[in-house]
Amino acid sequence: MDHREVEKAVANWSAAIYIPISLGAGLTFLLAATLAGNYPPVAKVGGAIWVGILSLIVSMPIVTSRVKKRWRNKS
Image 1: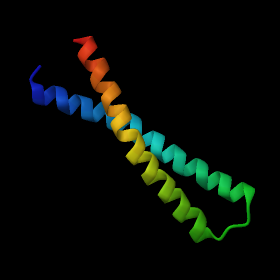
Image 2 (image 1 turned 90 degrees about the vertical axis):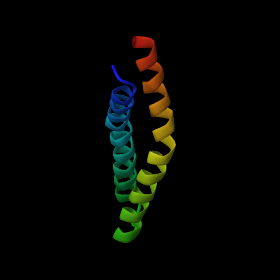
Image 3 (image 1 turned 90 degrees about the horizontal axis):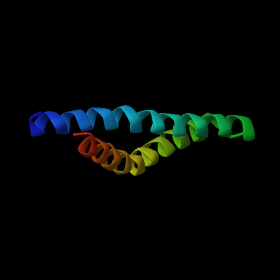
Image 4 (image 1 turned 120 degrees about the vertical axis):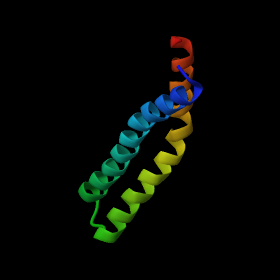
């Protein structure tokens, strides 16, 4: 495989992992804020977006490096 193809495959696999993680974290926050308190809708949605973005920032390099390591060990 060409180096560009490998990088594209790693990027696609990584995105398929870290995007659901981030969406799940945001939705979990939204659910917890809805069930645990009487917060205004703007605070719930804003917090969910904030948690989703932060978890995306944190999980992106971790997941990408692990996928890249597994891809390298596989070939």
